[in-house]
Image (cartoon, rainbow, N blue to C red; front, top):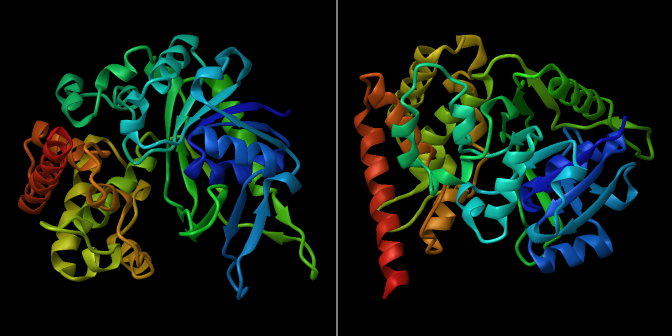
Amino acid sequence: MPYKILLLGASYGSLLASKLLYGGHHIHLVCLPEEAKLINAEGFKVRLPIRGRAEPILLNSQQLPGSVSAGPAETVDVSQYDLVGLCMQEPQYRSPGVRELMAAIGRSGIPCMSIMNMPPLPYMKRIPGLDYEALEAAYTDARVWDSFDPNNVTLNSPDPQAIRPPGEPANVLQVTLPTNFKCATFNNDAYNQILRQLETDVANARFATPEGPIELPVKLKVHDSLFVPLAKWAMLLAGNYRCVTADGMRNTQDAVHANLDESRSVYNFVVDLCIKLGSNPADLVPFEKYAAAAQSLSRPASAARALQNGAPYIERADKLVQLIARSKGMSHPAIDAQVALVDRRLEANRQKLST
């Protein structure tokens, strides 16, 4: 059965939408007016690399089975949707218009699937034994999440990597690492039926080529464990946040491989923390597999790019992990140093904006 799905964020949201459209679903993207105008007129396009093919294929939303619309947050009637996908960066949810939409989504009880590096605070409340109030310091504005029932929120790890190609229209997305989305289940069987249907739709997607239909990468994998999406934490702290340097940034490949021993130490520390929280080691990704993938990540991570561009707020999964570790009597000097560095860079950006 086709679902009506609301996705907040057209940039990364376009990647997930391109796969869900194969199931015939209707997707509405919440985005900036210029993006919405372009998407409503032309749809969106996703370049997807395929193993064994020299050139990526092009997924054009106007040629896929489902339908797409786009518009601002202020025009959304949340009662029209079966599922919400949170595809923006965490600081964006406090923006005027989006903040009010988030409150309405929370009150409605509609199931929400987050596709953020930063797990929503209600999702963290599904993990037992944490001091949830202490974790609020890692969020740009923890009050954004007050209306959400943790039972209605799940986390989908944004492992696939994608960029807006420089100099191209805002409705074009290029996938640079075609790995899978990994989504935890809800505490609700009816909501999980939606996830399972979407998982099947994405798995069955085929792209027509002159030599016949081909299977597409970037699947949606649904897992019963709360901790499978948290496998991204070790990658973020060993790679993404270490792209931030004292006076600039470096690419993810260099952040991981410039000091491989330290990267491994940070990575395994976060893995150990996840296991202490209740994760099965099988839920997590070995460092060697991540380090190999990082060899192809030739751009700085989005957090580092945002800092370099003067952002006063970014997602702070680094601080979230640090706070959780401290609550368990754990710490790592390299993580503490990196968190302090990001704190300083953010404070400098805020001071520039205030002068």
